[in-house]
Image (cartoon, rainbow, N blue to C red; front, side, top):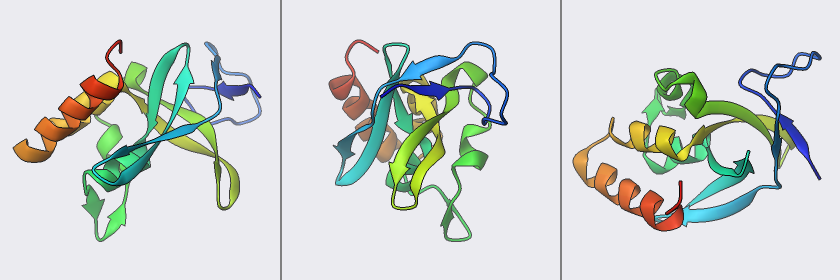
Length: 124
């Protein structure tokens, strides 16, 4: 199955620069499942899963939008994922975006996430 992925949410119009996404897979970082997909042959990770793993919360809620807003536009996109509520368009970030996100956290988590990213995605 092929999905359309864009830098902006779908509103019924085809955005410029559409990418094809492969079906999602899951990898684990410190016991936290991280959903991922491939866009343009590059791995992209679920922003909400990474925020959960890094314990990035506001008022007790996982709010990836606040944290990924500061990433370069080229490092963030939306991709369809199957969830308990059916197919939903979720925020995803590139591996380089994940490295940037990690650097905003405490040193211990930053070091562990960077090592995990290098081990899981050596060519990214």
